[in-house]
Image 1 (tube, rainbow, N blue to C red):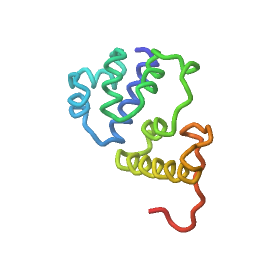
Image 2: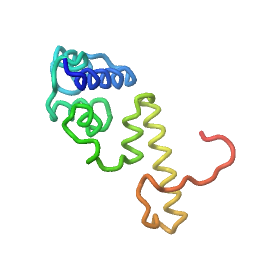
Image 3: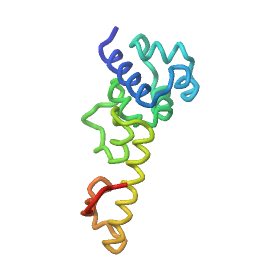
Amino acid sequence: MEDRLVELGKYIRSQREVARISVRRLAELAEVSNPYVSQIERGLRKPSADVLQQIAKALHISSESLYVRAGILDPDRVATVSVVDAVRGDPHLGPKQKQALLRLYEQLRAEAAEGMGGAEGGRSAGEVGMPRRRGRLS
């Protein structure tokens, strides 16, 4: 077994567990067989880029993160990760938490854009500053 495949499988399994879906459900969502997903998670099979893309879509994570782990994409050639991709790829957040964070992020970006007269001053999506707030965030 190749170490890279084992690590890829562990990562996919952890993302599936964070999403709280079964191997069977992931297989359905990714439109691949249940045994194939199980073999990928155990590091026994090397999935194609297409299968990785389907799995990433089903898990709501970045396909590039799977490509790098599978050795398909060179990590040095990957563009800077956007805030959205980073949130979607975070293994410690569940789907509801990711969705809430992304909604908040988009709201803050919109507020920042309004505060600058609709222009973001040449900043990239991940560089927009957060407005200062007092009290709790809801």
